[in-house]
Every structure is written in C-alpha cells, then in structure tokens.
Image 1: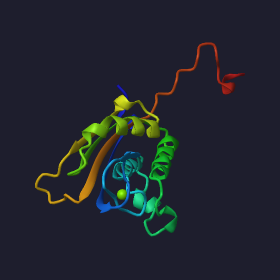
Image 2: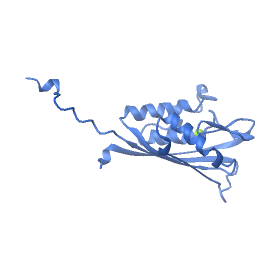
Image 3: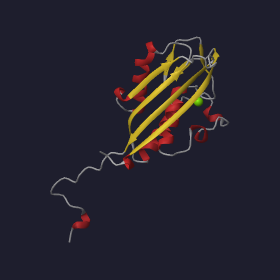
Image 4: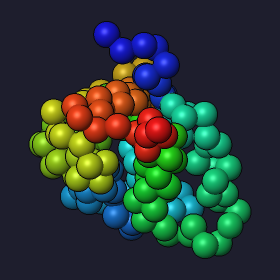
Length: 176
Ligand code: MG
C-alpha cells in the first residue's frame, strides 16, 4: 500500500446556462441539441470541472484565477487549453491520474446515448484509460435549475513509486 503522500484527491464543480444558437459541448464532444452552454469560453462545463479538480488536487490556483473571464484572449476558447494547463501542473508536481469520476446534472439532452463518446474523448484528452473515467448524469429533480448544466468531478492522483535501480549499477557518487 502506498503512503498517503503518494496520493492526492481533487474536486471540481461548474455550471453554465443554456443559450440558443450555440453548439452544446460537453467533455469535448458536440451534442446534437438546439441550445448550447453560454460562457466566456466554449462553455464546456465538464472540462471546466475536470480542470478545477486537477488543479485542486495539486493545490494550484483555480480555473478562474488562471484564465480570468475578464481576459479577452479566453473568449470562445477551446476548453482543452485549460485542461492542458491543469495536466501540465499535475505532471510538474510528479503525479499522474489514477481515476476520475463525474456527475452531470441537466434536464436535457439525455446523456446516456453520448456517454461512451464523451468517455472516449475525455480519455483521449487526459491520456488515461477510458475504464478509469466515470461519466454519469442525472436530471435536476426539484432543483429549479432546468436552464443550466452542472458538473461535479472528483479525481484521484497518484505519484509513481521510484523504480528500483537495476542490479549491478551504481551511482556515480558511489565510486571511490
Ligand atoms: Mg465554467
């Protein structure tokens, strides 16, 4: 069993409001729906929550601090840019993703038919196996949030164990 120092947990949450006339992007996949998610970037609520979960796991500043909505360069940005920055910080801290779980909360469209495609795309974006990625969805019963999509994400990071030195090799400093 690894020491607790070799694991980190992260949590991210995001919400975006539905707007007519823009594409609906969730997890890097465009879903067939008359309304998309508004926002300064492409409004990808799932990628934003994953980004914040990864940043939180390594105690980095959150997505809004690193990519302020007030900065015009992020207008319409592909959310992959935010995710790549978070992945870079995870790697720099010496961690890799063990697994990730997510829950989307939205009234429509139904996510079930897209879940496999979203999982495959998120797997590709994160560079981890699809079987380490949970994609779940629920409708917001009684929450009064029919016009928004919400994403919750938890992520577990692990620090790879140092590889044992192959037999017969010595550190330079061992030499007399
Ligand atoms: Mg967002």
